[in-house]
Each structure stands twice: as C-alpha cells, then as structure tokens.
Length: 541
Image (cartoon, rainbow, N blue to C red; front, top):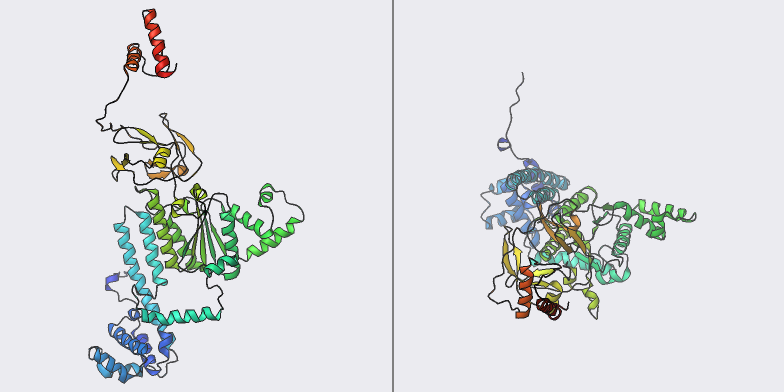
C-alpha cells in the first residue's frame, strides 16, 4: 500500500522564479531601453523577493527622472534610500548583470515574473473566497458577486493605484489628445449609429453610464437594438443586450425586421410575401456575422448583471452593453426594507461601478412617467424615473385616523404622519417627506382570499414570506402580509354630530341596524313622519 503524504498550503512555497527575477533586473541594467517595455508588464509587487522589489522600485524612479540605468546610478539611488547594504551591496548588483549576456529576452523574463505573481494572487483569492463562504451566510448573492470579482481581478488586474499624482497622468492624457487631434475631431468611443449623437458625445465612452429615457411605447427598445447593431458592425467586438421584458426570440425578430426593412407586425403574423424572403435571407447573413449577445433573464439583480458581464468579457471580450430597462432591474439588497427611490439610486450606482470596472459604456433604457408631458420644454428630470402609487390609494393619517387619497396629498402638499413598517416589520409612525404627480399608469385590482381588495400599479411592493416583492412578480396563491390590528388614532379632537342625526342613529341602533339598508319600526304615525323627515334632511332620502 502506497501512502502519499498530504502537504498543506501552509507548508508549500508560493509560486515564484527567482532566476527570472534576477535575469529581468539584469536585462534592464544591460539595456535601459527595456524599461519601457518591462514596466507595462510587471509591477513592483509582482516580485516575490523583497530585495528584487526594492531594486525595481529604484530603477523605476531613475527611469521616471530620465537618469541613467546603470550599476553606479542604481547603487547611488539605493544608498540614498538606505537600502544598498540591505540588498547585498554592489556585489549583488554586479551578479544581476552577470546573469544575462544580453537584454533580448527581457520581455520573456517579465512575463514569467508576472505569471508567477498571478498564481500567488490566485492562491490569495482562494483564501478570500473561503473566508466569504464562512462569513456571508445572510447574503449569499452578494457573496457570490464578491467572490467572482476577487477571482476576476486576479486575471484582469488594474494597473491604476487608488491615488495617482497628476504629473504621472499628464503624459497619457497628452498622448490621448494627440490621437484625437490626428482623428480630426472624429468620435473616440463606441458609435451610437447616429451622427448627431456621436458628434455630441464623441461616441459612448468607456466607464460611462448613459440613461436613454422616454415615455412607454416610444421606441426605446428599437432604438437600442439599432444602436447595438451599429456598434457591432463598427467595433467588431461583442455587444451585450439585457432584455428584462422581451424574449430572445422577440429581439431577434426585431433585429431581422429592422435589417431587412420589413414591418415587424407582418413577421409576427407570418404575412411574408415571396419577394421578402430574399431580404430576410440577406438580413440573416448580416446578423450572423455580428457579435451581439442577448440575455432575456427576467427577474435579475444588478449584481447578477455585473457577474454575467464579467464572464462574457473574460470569454469573448466586450465593447458595450444595453439594458432594457432600468426599472425592471432588481436591486442587490433584494428583500430588504428600502424605498424604491433608494433602490433605483443603488442600481444606478452599481451600473456605474460596473462600467468603470469593466471599462465599457453601459447604456440603460428607462421609462419616464407622464410628469414630463406637463412641462413646457418637455425636459425630463430624474424624478420622472420613479414609480408611483395610484391616485385614489388611501393613506391613513396616523394622528387622526383620517384616510386621505394620494391625489389630495400631492395636490395640496399635505404633510402628516402615516403608518409604516421598520426594519423589524413593526408598525411605526413616519412623516411624509415628499410626494409628486407622475401621470397615468396601468392599475391592477388585487383580491386576497379573506376578501381584502387593493388597487395598485405593477411596481407596488408587498411583503411576502421571502421578503418584499413587486406585484409583477406575484402569482395567484402567494401569501402576502397584512396587519393583524390597526392602531387606534391618537387624537383629542371631538367628533361633531348634530342632534337630528344622533336621533336617527339612535333609532337605527335600537332596531339592530349598523350598516347597509335598514327598515325602522316605530310605534306611532308621528314617529314615522319624524324618521322620514330626518332621512330626507340628513341624507337626502
């Protein structure tokens, strides 16, 4: 029986190649021109031996100042830093130069050093992922997203520090200006397919989040698909399209109808003339060559979008992404008690961070409410992206018990305490801080098994066993939370009732009638006449 001893990660030496590190440093000392090439491949932290990292830092400092990169200048720089003796003195610097006869293989050595550093980074990432698995039981989606990000950064590390001094950035900016000047003002980013937009934006720029907003049924999806096709034709790099409303098949049909210049409704009905088949065949040939990737996942969170984009970029590359549309994206804090405005803000922040992280433009479609139509200039505002309640929705005044329509709150800008729920789902009093009119939206009637009825928009959220869910995500049979009891209003105001109405109410209560149609039994003709008169004067009966 053969026994193979297990060697723990603690007992193993991290991946490294000290000979390659020495050869790389020696190549730079032999030929200073290699520093420009090497510095684009390795960073000081890529060296496993701390003394090699120290030497490389000194060499890079000399290079930035335009000073000679030889043994004498390097020794003086290390001496000024108080590090010459710690790295082995002039003797060790001489040994570095003796390791290589020429600098011809400097780039090869640099890539070996970089690869070993990447492997060490992967080991460190594995440790971080393991730690996330133990510490993130309450937020699994966030843990998965963070784990993917950690591993992604190993192979796609950024060469930028958290802080960068302006002098170190000037050269790159100047070179970028030179390239733009040579292009004679042409766009520098991903094309939109529309010259006026490209002239205004210079193309979609990496790291930008762009919101394309309009009222419903104004052609946002068609516009985005046309832009995606134009970008794919021009960039020859993958274009991603997230559709949270339409299926992949519907999107492809739209792409076909647009490219073939045929009525999309005819394709849906199958009303295709014989002469149109040639157009469809040509359109299929064009689309077949375009690197457009479609994702029709419906209930997707913003972190899931980011994860899928990372994987797509790693596998195929990525030029830009279109998201249709913003209000259907779920927040990363799914199920937590936050208002919709905070959710939209978080979604936008995450999409912006994704654009910067992946160095791509993110174009998100969004629906505007009808408030934009009430303005003279029709200029949209950020508030036009927000969801709303139905105008006749009743809100209870926690102070008086009065039930007030949302329409009245918006029109009069009334402010009072209402009943809300806190993080522990307890009823608490909270003040109204803002209200606004957003126009018309489809309203749905929801009826519970107990007979309760509520009219609300598709974006209205209900508390379920698994957290807060929008109406559009609920199905028949799902349980929703309702208050067991309603808190009595805390008020000292007196209820005013006229003596005549009190008299009629007394007769009704006496006969056992508290609501609905009622017949009052009286003993005399005079009492009957009195009841009839009271009904006419008080209620118009």
